[in-house]
Image 1 (cartoon, rainbow, N blue to C red):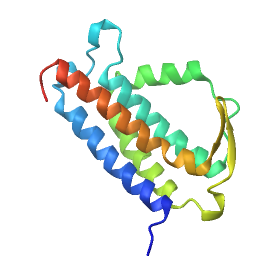
Image 2 (cartoon, rainbow, N blue to C red; image 1 turned 120 degrees about the vertical axis):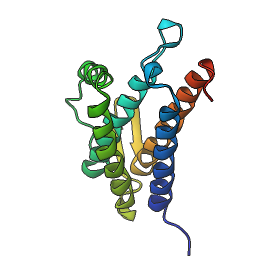
Image 3 (cartoon, rainbow, N blue to C red; image 1 turned 60 degrees about the horizontal axis):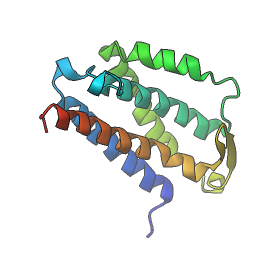
Image 4 (cartoon, helix red, strand yellow; image 1 turned 30 degrees about the horizontal axis):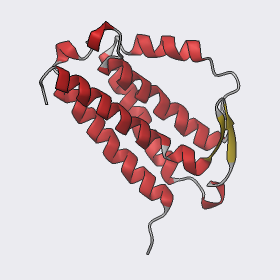
Length: 153
């Protein structure tokens, strides 16, 4: 029996979440807020983004509407504050990651082709289901790059 795309993306997202956390855990604790060249994003900043966006992506998949009041500046401030508090960040990651995985798993087949207007254009529900997986894989690579610069791979 073929696997549903929802279950496929849920499985991929779950694996990516574990891989991302393992990459982060590979960094020495005192280097998680280190910025390559003083300008690049830190591992904590990237983890904060994922923690927040996993939750907002789950909400998007449930409501089928991008929040018209979404404030990108407020998001940046929230991310910066969260990146300074590992306990709060990890708690949000541990709540929002299973939330998005379960939400992906429960997307109805008939909703897969619904288009949602995003600030950058239309996206289908099926495209949005793949976003958490892609985003976590991308940030795993970025964090592993930081680890390679620190010679901790």
